[in-house]
Image 1 (cartoon, rainbow, N blue to C red):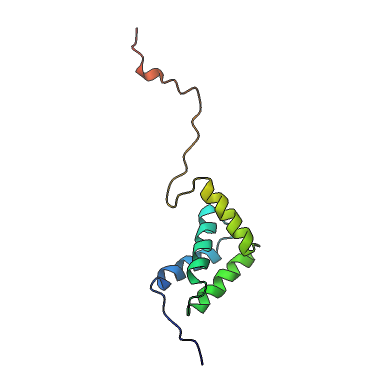
Image 2: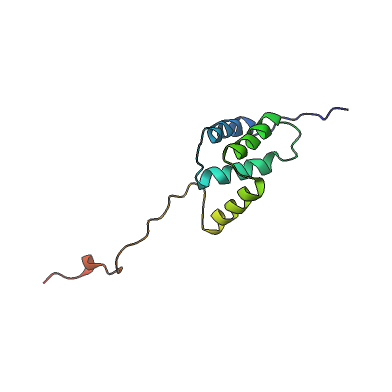
Length: 104
């Protein structure tokens, strides 16, 4: 008996994201995190075979195994990554603010 195929409620949004990932030659942290979460979301899902195929293709294009991807994303999260957050520039200098001093 054939397995019943379901439509995932986030399919359309995820399809757009997978298409974007396929076009990325060298992934940034956010790309790796997106790929890992989509792989988890669709693993074992009875449907969206095209998405699963393209997610696997993305892994191959980036020359990563799932274990390598998960290792890298664990390090990304451990390093303080937060989706949508802008990277914070390192402060330079002593931290002494001369603007608060009274002028002579």
